[in-house]
Length: 226
Figure (cartoon, rainbow, N blue to C red):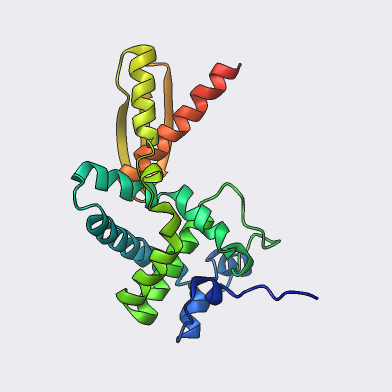
């Protein structure tokens, strides 16, 4: 006896009233690019909106749940929750790739890309436009419920890890330079002395710095393995 797989709306426990909004949220802009469609996808605008809504809702939840903690903890906790890796993990938990359209020729989403995390933000943006902040916050609480633990919220971010490694191994602090605007946000280069550097990108300068730190850590790990 076969079991019918749940729909995305059943998984997130919300049914869209505006079907066009839902379709825009689960259709990546690459579909239009591949077909050379003259129409413009609203998916990236939904992603932009969803990013802002997600940060706001997560900030409110953290403030209410951890009233006794300082701004530093709250800021790091929010960064941990809204980072690409967390959003990608959530996308996989709800099998978002099985419900979305992606136009790379075979419909398969690249494993190590930011597509899934961006699509989570687009879904949140569409939710907000379809139902307002209350229902959107309800879905966000459901999706992120397993991530609001002390252990996960206090995980060290790449910048912290790189700083500790740099001071221990070379006795200097990493330097972040040349933040510049890109199509998708910002690009930053991190340096340790004159010998080690890496580039990172992100929607904000802070995210770009974390990306650069992560990339440099991976590079340094590869050097150590040689």
